[in-house]
Image (cartoon, rainbow, N blue to C red):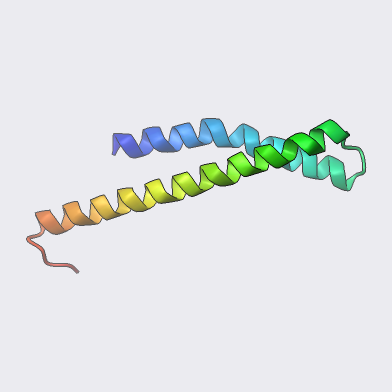
Length: 80
């Protein structure tokens, strides 16, 4: 359980500033106030953010599979 919390905390610490940057860039772009460097920087940040989401989704699937395997092991193999 502590590995899950640490993983989620790391995701929050890394992902939240990226999401904020992307959201504010989109907001400024729609208001026609975004600078060219900010828009150019948004593309690599978006790629990193998508990569982070993919890695986190895979990790959550692994945690879920491990939890189900542990539950099956403790219940004698019977599933509800």
